[in-house]
Amino acid sequence: MERGAGATLLLLWAMCCGHARAVGSSRYTIEVTNGGPWGDWAWPERCPDGLFAIGFSIKVEPPQGIPGDDTAMNGIRLHCSLERSVESESGRWGAWSEPQWCPHGNFLVAFSLRVEAPKTLGDNSGANNVRFRCSGGWELEGPGLDWGDFGNWSEVCPKGICGLQTKIQGPRGLLDDTALNDVRFFCCSR
Image: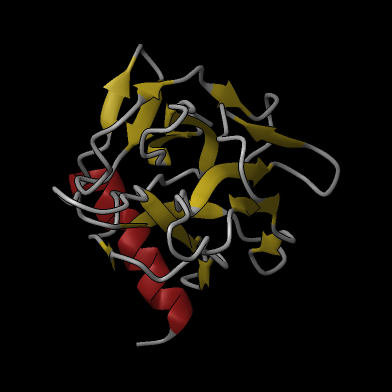
């Protein structure tokens, strides 16, 4: 099947049979089931009206070695256009990656999160990376760490992703820090 035909079928399935959760009368969120358990949901951020996410960047702390405290992915930034970006709360560690962009005329429609399973003993890191699917079927993967596993893909936002909300564990002093644990994205309503 050609890439364009597959994307069309995927979008038709999402409009007909998808399970994106309604929020209010015209907003939807997409989520995944493998997010980390720590932290609290921060404030939501949305692209300005009429814009949708065409790319993203992530904030990543490199491995800290032993006996360091690894937090891995600390934030996600959506690029709504070449000049405008939005982000919910981010952890304080790491640096922002260069943006990754959907091919011209495409936009972000679904995501998958790489999360390290909680450990009873040892250093927990929460979410480690994210990948997105563009409207044309292309996949983009962030330059995060490879600890843990990618979970299932979220449902699809038929009209694109327009915002996000992160689940962040704040700094804990001498205790184990994880920073970003989970994220949900808002679907465009038009």
